[in-house]
Length: 560
Ligand code: AMP
Image (cartoon, rainbow, N blue to C red):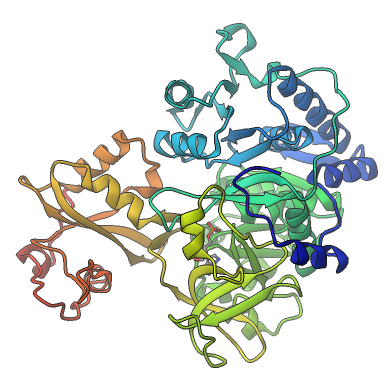
């Protein structure tokens, strides 16, 4: 078992096995069974590239053998950062075959995140595209390899074999005659997802074969898919939502077809839905907004859609109500977290439930508690913090004992940081959050991370980052800064943070200058006051806090 991984307590694990949640099935077993059952059927589509189940099975075997020949083995960690496409699926399943664990980096990640993920996971390998959306990943990869001791192997997608310069191996060359490999241990870590980030840097979420194959089975019960389904992977495949809710893995397990969308625009996705007969997909509310607008001016025939899953950020009932009329298909609301717990609305739920709640847990073994700040359960229907425990909810972040002591209760419940209530019918409604995270579209931005970077700038004496509402993205990021010397500007700050190598979605959207930050009675930055200011409301009085004339006049330092 991987060092630094917190397993479920033995008696709990035994119960999950006895009760049939964990069946000792690995992700490799899931794929191999699908290959046996669906050989010549199309498994994956990207543009003109169509891959059958037979081909997928063989590609993953050959890639596993190729990786092994290059020195990747059981227990190794490999950071995988690939755009939506079959290669992501092939590389991940090849690593599963080897008993090596991919770490799912997002395509938007830059040197800050990739270096951190490589260091934290002790990765020996990094798989990346040569360039993506104009960004030079190859240069980033070489830099990170120079800086991170464990990192030895660089594998690049899209580099011609004859340009190979020895230190970077083109993925196309990672290919060898299949070899017999020992089956991975189902109770061991299969791969790592990333936390939505309450701490300065993302934490690693270990997902075992047992827990993930179960999650996918449970998600498929709550969201039935069959071999006739065609799933459009719109959001990055590295998101838990796209990968396994039931997503790519669930659809492959059912013998359906996964169509990969390189970007979420309606211009690209609507024709794909029409051409490929897509039956369902999963999007975040901001993408749904784009699609609702696209529906008004684009002619595409989307009648193949059976339902649309929307989740990962707050979906307002008014927007939810537009789905069925606009797309002629059902809406399924999804609340989920890479840490585990998933709740879905169901097909036979009344319309009001589908429009106004995030549904109920996908597993009968999911345990939910809604508690007050002293961990006492609140009266039914009252808002409190959502805690979760269950057969696919982690018991600890990887290599993070100190954080784990705070993030979990003594009896193993994960503290989600979300504020929620349960309806009398047992459906969950997400009402807000206490964690210091901005949910910008589907992307989660850790306030602490951005603040840390702001504080390294010479022009910044103090900084605090809060969300403010945005019609399109749901929330955007506002940075309140007390300048040191010459006042910074938004373009200047963005350029500096980009220079630090921070992913673009984390850059502040707005800058407000203050003469000082408001403090709580305990002397901490009062983010409630700042959030009210950012919303344009008059701030609740904070002791000794005087907004600068700029803020009072409503002027921002957004010199763009
Ligand atoms: P991630 O692990 O990146 O998927 O982020 C999980 C977090 O996203 C949750 O803890 C919530 O804060 C938020 N989230 C996910 N689904 C929803 C939803 N349907 N409504 C509101 N917030 C959501």
